[in-house]
Image (cartoon, rainbow, N blue to C red):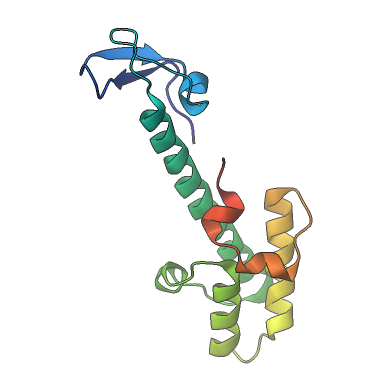
Length: 136
């Protein structure tokens, strides 16, 4: 997810709009050029939007990997009920006896490792999508 840089922001304090560097907003260091109010709330909102978008994309990438590698259909309605990768693995294993839980877990761990660029263990599958893909 990218923002226009500089990003026009309306100060919650004085209601005036000015452009601000995205880096300073995300670092929670931006202050209003008119009234000097800290724009931390704007930066936190931006961080939240980035985390939500990253989690959604990560979840979709995992679902696509499952479909391609295992031939299992992952519906949007199923994904919406899964707060964490473990939920998805368990629900798919319960719904399709032809795909063993261990195989689903392996595919999900491999895809997450690729996306996160780090080793992923089965314990990591209990983390929420947002925790896995969110940014501080």
